[in-house]
Every structure is written in structure tokens, then in C-alpha cells.
Length: 417
Ligand code: GAL
Image (cartoon, rainbow, N blue to C red; front, side, top):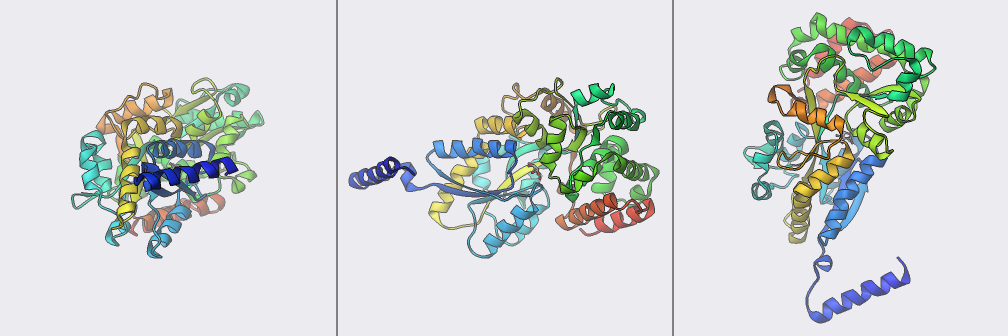
């Protein structure tokens, strides 16, 4: 802080004290927010919320904890709560992750704020269910991400003389052409959750909506033994040959960067990757192509992010949380934040005309409830999901894993509910 700034602040404080009133900034709505948004577009999206909070008179303490997928940030947040030093708010993903917070009394009931903001009518029913427990609201849903997209470099495809494959028959020949043109066909990253993104793209786009639901919602072991499931596993295994040795050192956004700079052909990732393309000033359908399916759309796997505000009786903290929750769910911020993040607003009552062409595909699919496929987080414990991610990471790096072994281990992992 410059000398001038210090003097100004001191002067303000003195003036406020003399007048016997506290300005709203000095009264101190102050939000320390734990999240895992550290890539270029993610940080820019957080700034949209932070700036709005500051503009409304609050102070923002940004606590970004690196690690896409959020395992690190969640551990830090839980440890802070257990240790008696809770942050104002922390990020989780909608679904069963909330159970632990509610069961342990870590999270504040914000039903009154949700009612005042008319959330129930504004957001998809599955999302509403995912933020409520026993009729009380415990989460602030901030975005709707399409979890299973593919992002293609148009210059890379052109160099290889191919288009985005329109059928599964065209899929591997397209990857072969990319390889022959000296391009890394698939940009793969190191973390298990990123292999899981690729896996779920195959599950929905090749396996189909029914298989996806039977496996992740019904935990139907026969579906996991079916020919369609085995085909998805075999396809994943075959894709190993189209990655490169650098994958084991890459974060998800490093892989996106490879597609952005046309070094790689495709990445399979949620539409937070699109945030990175847009942040790099790349144009959808000009510089990069997006599709949630090879061939006809099979449904839209959606998930997203939410914040919980921590349980407290401290009036100052409650006030800070109120401002934070209302800021996040305000119509303006819903629109502005999601444009930068690559996601679509959770509120159906906002203007989505500025959403990019890829997002418009997502909006159109989401408009029909038959296409809405809630991601696995809605129906499965964090433990089961973690076990599947470990399995996927190990099987991806060990070419000797058999399909039978994979199927058996997958069923075992999903039984950990
Ligand atoms: C996901 C989250 C996204 C995105 C991604 C990578 O868990 O839902 O918003 O940021 O991690 O960090």
C-alpha cells in the first residue's frame, strides 16, 4: 500500500469515528472464500464475484488452493472447520459431497436467503434437490457445467486433412490422421479425475444415456458387465496409444493449452476448458470446435460448482455470508460469472443471449428434461468416485489391465456408497 493510500485509509477511519457511524466497508462484510479456481479463466471468473462483493462494500480474501477437481481445497476447508477456524465460504460440487457437511453441522442453513431469492423456481429440480436436505437449503449453486465435452483444434484438424468425427467409425481414423500429421491426437492430463472426464465422455456418447443412468444411478452390476460397457472400456484402452509421454506431467489446463496452440487435436473435458479458449481469445467454431458427443447427442451430463457458507453464530460473519450468497445468486453475477467460466447460469430466469455457440448447444440440450443427465456426483459417495478415479488412472497407465479386471474393480468401487 502506498503512503498516500495508508493516509487515506487512516483519514477515512478517523472521519467515520468522528461522525460516530461506520461506513458499510468499515463495518466489515469480509469474505474469506476457499476455492480451487487457479487457471487463467477460473481466476478471472472468481474476480467477477470478488469485484461485485467489493463494490457492494465488502472485503474479499481470496483463498485459492491449486488442484483441479478440488480434492486439495476441500481438505483444507474441512480442516479449517474442524480446527475451529472456518472460512466464510468454501467450494464443493453439488451432490453427495454435501452430506458430510450437513451431517456434521459444518454448514449454515440458508433457506431464508434461498426463499427470498426465489431459487427453487429458478434452478433445475435436480440441482435444487442437491442443495437441500430435509427441506433446508445448504448450498449456493453457482454454475452449471457440461461435464463431458470434447474440444478440437480446427487448425490441427485442417493440417491433418480431417473434420471432427461424426461417427464412432470415423473416430480412430481421425486420430490416426492427426498422429500422422505430427500432432498429439489426444491431450491427456495426469490426474485421475481428468481420465474420468474422458471416460464419462465415452460412457454418455458411446454407451448412451440409459447405460450411464443404469451404472451411476442404479449401480446395476449387470449393466457393468454388458457388451456396451465393455465396449466403452475397450475404447478407452485403445485411446492410450494416442496420447504422449508428456501427459503424466500435465494439469488439465496445460492440456487445454496444447489444443489452444494447435499442438494437440482434442481434449475431453468439462466446459471449464472452454473458459480457457475464450480467455485466450479463441473463437468457437472458428479456432476450436466443441461437441458433447461423437454422432447424435445422447444427453447432456451436467454438474457444476456450489459454495457452502460455514455454520456460525457470529453476527459479523452472518452478515458477510448474506452479502456473499446474495451476490453469487444475483442475476447479473450469474450471467457475468458464467460467461467467463465457460458454464451456463443455474438460474433459468436470466438473459443467456450472450452465451457462446457451444454454451447454446448445452442450453438447448438442458431445455429438455429428458436430456438432463445428472453427473455421478449427484448419486455416488465421494469415496466411490475417488475409487473409480484411482482405477481409471491406474488402468490408463497400465496397458496390461484386462477388461474383466477393470469391470470387476469398477463394480467394487461403485459399491462403496
Ligand atoms: C471442477 C469444477 C470446475 C473446474 C474444474 C477444474 O471440479 O467443477 O469448475 O474448475 O474442476 O478446476
